[in-house]
Length: 127
Image (cartoon, rainbow, N blue to C red):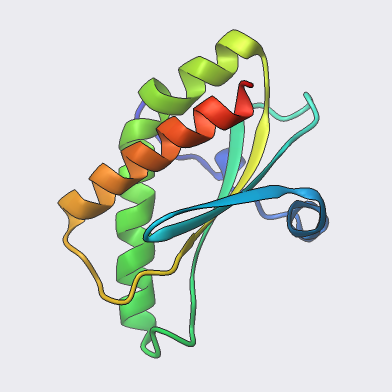
């Protein structure tokens, strides 16, 4: 239930390009979210990519810290806030979450904002 497996990560360059060209996006500070419906062949309801800009965070250590906190907040909240809503409406999504914040916030901030983001995404995707 609280896992984050390889199959849940979006690695296909063609799908990521399609996500940027054809997908919808919204801001939920400090995250920018791009998403689009996916074909029904994927095993999990959502495939996701996490990104942190190199321009804002020069050191890989900082980028990795932010990505680790984003992944952990997503992993703990995805089932209750996103997967259940998508499974009820039988939809699948491709998702790109980019961090656009100016400083590295504590983990509880990440978790609170990720919960808000997933709730907003579930509402938009199940319309």
